[in-house]
Length: 109
Length: 162
Image (cartoon, rainbow over all chains, first blue to last red; front, top):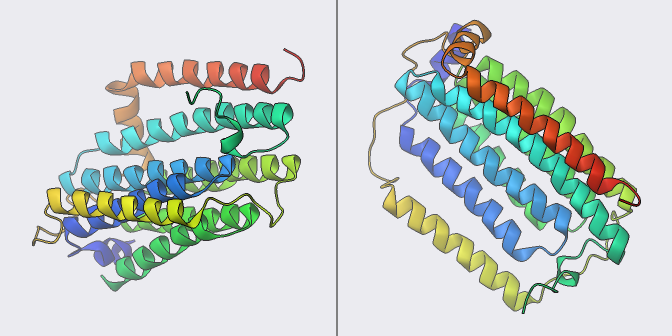
């Protein structure tokens, strides 16, 4: 256990922020460039996880356990969100026979 | 110290594969690997409880749900409708702009203090449980309500004829 906690010593906090920003941006890009609803959903999960990692890093940096509790709540929220979202995708698929988001343009105009 | 950079590189690499993989099933599998690298990050930060929760809830439950829906809807075919190349390039440029804005506004590239674990048993179950059931007892109970309503909503939405 000591080796593991030693391994993290000396990483600047900025590198965690940079890593989380990069992964969050990748999630945003995924939402923008894909048309499959499920892949878009997975990109949203990627963004949520980037935020989780950053909260944990800040929590360890400040020595405050509240950040890790927030991450726990975000995970519970993500589970609920995935259940409802996938149910909606299944319903859309049943009505339109595809998971393509371009079919869902009724609210566009 | 180097382990962090190796794992960070792997996280970025696999999350790029998630959004650029043609087949949605491959995307899900790459996403599982990405979440595994996140678990390693949590272990490096000595957040052992979160590492286990991430491993079980995300990699176990949520990803199985994704894979299930994907297989159920029979979307695991190569011929996915693709956006025009112009829109794709615009999306990538927009994402890069977001990244540059975030990095610039947070002054990410300047020198900062290193992460030092002040309290090494911060992320253990004992410590987190005390915080969760003292300060955050009400949100914890409310989150159970949220999960219940999500479950009811999911069943109601996915039912054949509502």
